[in-house]
Image 1 (cartoon, rainbow, N blue to C red):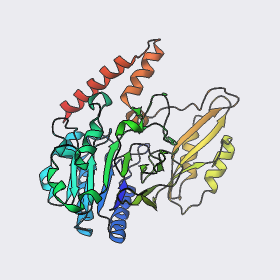
Image 2: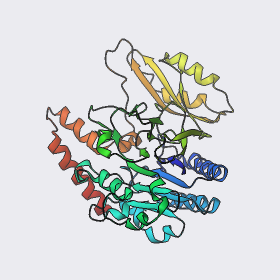
Image 3: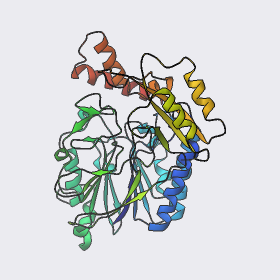
Image 4: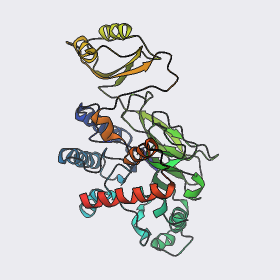
Length: 397
């Protein structure tokens, strides 16, 4: 089975108030071209299609049009989409029936009572087990293994018909999930807590069962394999940066999966027409040095700019205006003056914008607030808070 594995599109994401629709559409067009060139059997999107659970109508239209283009480019291809922690589960499932006419399978909610919902057969090619994001406490123990066993035909279940085929034993099994697996390189993510990344608790990869041929993960933004000795557990990473700290190549994964063999990978780079650039490339510059770097930045290069500035005390009151003035006539846009106090022992201190605050995980905000009041935000309190967030999200739908 040949598949393209991608995740974490974060459609609708804005960067310090700047709209990124042009970049996101360019990314989607590149996806279409990659499908045209490589003609995969399956196109997997492992969660976080949207940046928020309430994307605008324009953003939802952008995604729908992309699905139609992908299908029309290669009508025999199956498209499987699972919800991530940024997504609205119900929004993924509203159009389940019409989507199937285009070979699009969107799985938003975990269904513990009807595992058949998560088992998608790609005739003659393989089986996809699509498990959307859910709070770990809501995933029954052994659920992943149950799905794998059903797909293998080890237990009676909804795919019994497959066992009647001689070729069934040769079909590879692809498992999809959106979570934080221990051992992942979380470069680009804000690691505030030892037990979670981006609001999702770490999970041992062993809890995801045995017997799959490839595990297509989403949530961590850096493309990578998780080292298990089998070379078959992979984060595709995000195809487009959502923060300046994601200063690595952004790709999708083209993977050839055969039963019982290590997958064969080719990384396909996605080019952002408006990249995120930090000046200087490493470390910090004085305010005058930073202004010189910005002044010398190529006029013709479109980019978002973060200035890393070393200061004693405070920047001049008109620092932002000075920076904006230096970009007059240039294609770049200044996003952030990221300051660090000279000789300070603490980490980089940043002033949060409204956009940054909106992008933060509500649980992180609650934990920070509790700590500021000298209160321990216990695991039980975190679970209760997560349940409240889930209820609020359902009531907003």
